[in-house]
Image 1 (spheres, rainbow, N blue to C red):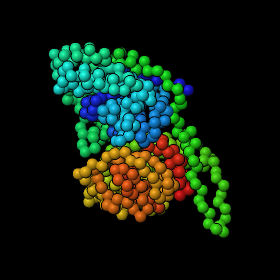
Image 2 (cartoon, helix red, strand yellow):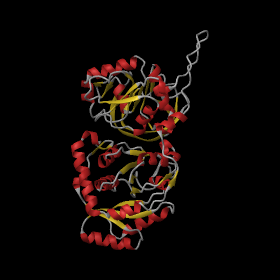
Image 3 (cartoon, rainbow, N blue to C red):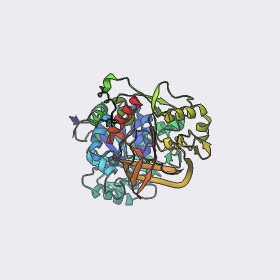
Image 4 (cartoon, rainbow, N blue to C red):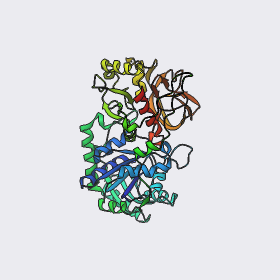
Length: 474
């Protein structure tokens, strides 16, 4: 199979240069031209893809070589970009910044090389003139395999400032494909974990994305950028497929028979069994989720439905399993606590032995209390906000058999929170984590697997298969 989608990587020398504004604005501008635009984000970030989805009308997807492995970058890209006219990939941090101590792993540069995609460098030019040429030359020449093919100058102060910048860059050989003036209206509000998600400010986010698109229309050479995207060579390889991934994953281990008991029933074909209904938390408080998780659950035979813990007083009828991902329950603790009927329904499901997978925000929601507000009480832990940011990639191994994994299963994950739970691990911990220090964390209790660790199931599709089987048999 050949992957021939035109594509651009939007990168920058550092965080705060304007990547999200430019990438989202370009996605929206090209979509307004009638192009089917596929949005992607390098790294584990959940929030930017929400703005990308708003700009394009398509699911925003992540490309993270640390969480998923370098070998899955191109297949996941092709899966998301299937049938599209253009793909825009927003980078992470600075162009060459990746996982700490791992060289180029998980960097924007690595993804650009894997995808053989031209890179457009977004430069905050607010405090420089001729020096911009030295900066661009350095980034363009640092790694010959990274094709820095254009520059978009951001936060340009005046026509004279623009003239000086263009004159300097004429000597660099890297063309200027856009000049953007300072514009407060394209800004998006932030708080303790970054941008405020789209789900919390949808109307205002629509206005922000429209303003970003307008700025790109006015300041960027869209025809030149599209021509650059079309210069990307074809890639060999097949698109990732959830069904194929599930089929190729190891089957869940059969239960160990009790001595003297009747032999277990032979395995049945999943496609002939009734699909278990798995409820996935959504709404403003639970916005962190990778699209591939629901796709894998569906491919494994589940019926996936969403519910909003802020609004829905009951779980969907027939719920046999629960997935509660990340988000901002700390922002909505009073509202979540006030929805007592749903809290009781979640606790009843969990104490009845149904499989429950909870990550980060889900862990907080299952706790006894969050900042003094009663939560579901499934786990006998107390959660609270902290001034300390916990952030970084983690290598993890499953410590206890659970609805997600057998003990010994290795996965990579990411932590990103300003909360703590006490205690930090149960009698049967979820994970043993290496880096920054060796520790155990999380909780395995009946069918519950709860942890701070965000994981990407495409790296271990057997996780989804096992979870669905447990939902089917619990």
